[in-house]
Amino acid sequence: MTQPDVPTVVTVRRDTSGRDVASELGPGTFLAPRPLMPAADGLHLALVGTTAGLLAGDDLRIRITVGPGARLHLMEPTGLVAYDHRGGTSSWRAEVEIAEDGELTWDSQPFVVSSGAGVTRSMDVSLAPGARMLWRDTLVLGRSGERGGRIRATTRAVHDGTELLVEDLDLTDPDVRELPGILGPHRVVGAVTALGADPGGPPHPSRMDLVGPGAQIRLLDTDAPAVERELTAVWESWRAP
Image (cartoon, rainbow, N blue to C red; front, side, top):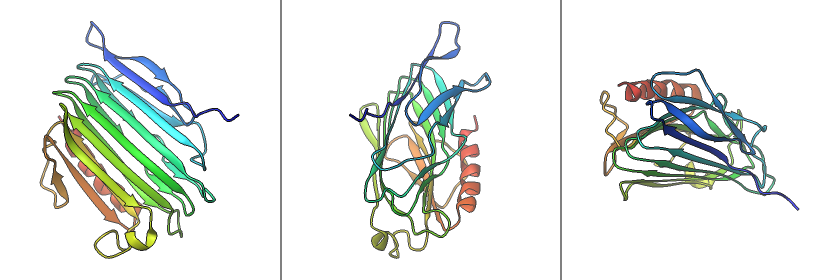
């Protein structure tokens, strides 16, 4: 009998001395949290891949909890590749809960959807009053020379009990997503999203302000390095104190 995939679990709190510490670092089937060098601005962790990528039947799950006033900074050393699923499907699911005045920054690497892959990806975020999150993500449809597989990416962020961002990005049909006005020839979709606070920063033509505190900048291109360079500039600007 096949055992269910184990989720990656990260729980961070602020102790009585004011330090941000991990009360739980649970490695999952696909990702393991690893502490980085101590820093004054919060706890820094890397999400390190423990498998080659996503195959048919895989269910990658991440659960992140940030306690009151705690600060967590996540980074991914490498991207993730969903390989040809040969008719099957896989999933990537993240659940994030940030308590009062907590902070999470998540600097993710590109998520590559190879031709033949079929992936559902969901990000569910719950923010208490004063909580904030900054998330960078990039979807790449296909490896070099590929058209790319199927992905449906949903995001739901709730701030103080009210929906802040609800998004359903359906890129499952290549013929539809390549139409003018959707993606056209572009196969790279990158974004930096601020939740729970206005990130400030200089004006940007692709900026979309959310219904509550927060904003998003989304970029489309045929070239992943070009998107990553521009997203890096936005990320650094929005991360600035």
